Length: 272
Image (cartoon, rainbow, N blue to C red; front, top):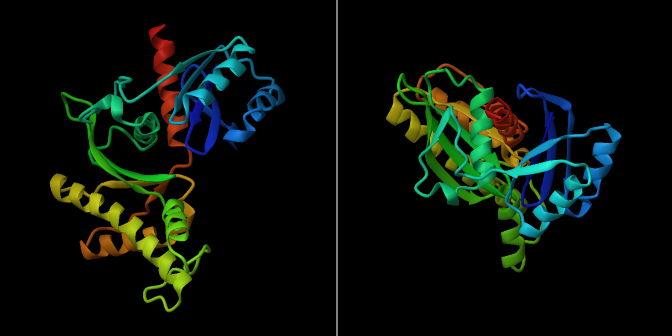
């Protein structure tokens, strides 16, 4: 059994996978950095004694070291993956793989494993976190695996709200309704942020569609999705209508990084 760790900018997500990479969704939790002690409580609550942990971290090294110390008390070794970690079903086309965020890379692996990697169509994954990333995966061919070809990074929805509140004197904080033609400041801010986020997603989706001549599968994840979900789904439906394509829902995947770690843990088991 493998403990899975996704240490993000604000939260720590934990999960558990068996030797085949199967995850039990009931064995998962999430907590903020200051609540790190909850990891010990969670392991004890579920009577878990993992022998190995597989994880990614984009947080400060000190936090990663604290996690290592906690798991050491359970006689659990930890292996941390990054953008250079090879994956048999996905090749990394990033110019400098070592500079690709570990969570971004494992999230792409997780999306691919959950969304039919044998399908002959591209995939666009958008993760709404502290930052929003919009990434494209091209399908596998007869002689090479699926390929990550790059994507966008922009401030996440909440970071956009915070930036406006911090850098403007009178706008303040608060979330308003999303409207086509907002007539108050709160609605104008919320509508502008939603439009910016959805616009970035559809830009990459359309570029991928034009290059591949196949409509990409759209998958979204991340804690910031709720702020702009309605606008994203509406804009996506409009895009499909404009191109006379069959209606298709964007797919929500709650824990792509943990899904990617579960897959990689199974590969580790096979090679040990």
